[in-house]
Length: 323
Image (tube, rainbow, N blue to C red):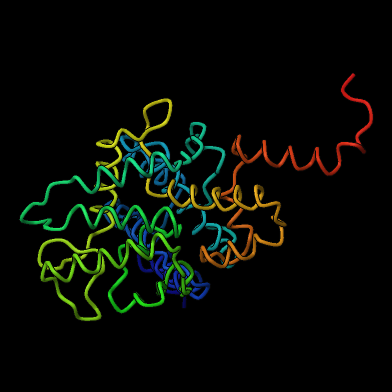
C-alpha cells in the first residue's frame, strides 16, 4: 500500500533531490529554503501536493519582490518539479513560458586602475569606530584582494589567519563553490598590502589564533556577507566610483574586472589567449573555461584589441568588403 499522507510524495522527492544536487558538489541552501517555503504554503492550504492553481497562488504572494528574485523562485520550483517528473510522470510541472520576464541584464561594470586608486585612498581615510577599529585597513585589503585576486565575496569573508601564508604571499581558499579548494598566489603589490594589514591587525590586539577571521571587526568578529556587501557599496559611493548611469559597482564586478584585466594583459603582451584561459579558470576556481567565459563578455576594449590582432595577422587574407 502506497503512503498517501499529505505531502508524502513531495517530502520523499525533496529529500532525494537535495541528496542528488549535493552529490554534485552544490550546497543548494537557497534552493532548499525556497522549497521549504513552498511546503509551508502547501501545509497552510491543506494540500496533498503542488498543483497549477496552488503554484499560481504561491507566486502571487511574491509579487512585491524584484523581477529577478521572483524568476529565481519560480525556476527553483520548476527544476524540482522537472526532477520529480522522472519518476512521477503525472506530477505538476510549471510552464516556464508563464514565468516573469527579466529586464535586459546590465553588463558588469569594469573598474579601472584610476577608480581602484580612488577606492584605496577613500578606504585609508575612513574613520575608525568602536565597533570597527581598523575599518580603513580592512576595506583597503578587501578591495585589493577582490581586484587583484578575483575572489568571490564568500571566499573573502571566510578567510582565516590559517589560510594566509604571509611569507610566500599565498591564500588558501577552502571549500568554495562545488566544494573545491585551491591555492591563490597574490601579486607583489597585494602581498605588500597583505603584510601591512597583518601588522595593523596585530597591533590592534585582535585574536591571533589560526581560526580567527582575516577581515574582522569588533572583538575579532568576521564580516558577514551582507556586512561586506554594504561596506563595499558605501565605499564606492564615498569614492564616487560609478558608471555613466550613476550605478556603483557590485562586489562581483570586481571579479569581472579581474578576469577582463587578465585578458587585456595577454592581448597587449601578444600572448596566446586561448592557451592561457585554462590557467585563468584554475586561478578563479572554475570547473572549466565555460564558467570563466561568463566573466569575459564582449567589452569594447577587449573587442578592440582582439580586432587589432586579427587585422594584423589575417587582414591581408580578407578580400573586398561589404557591398
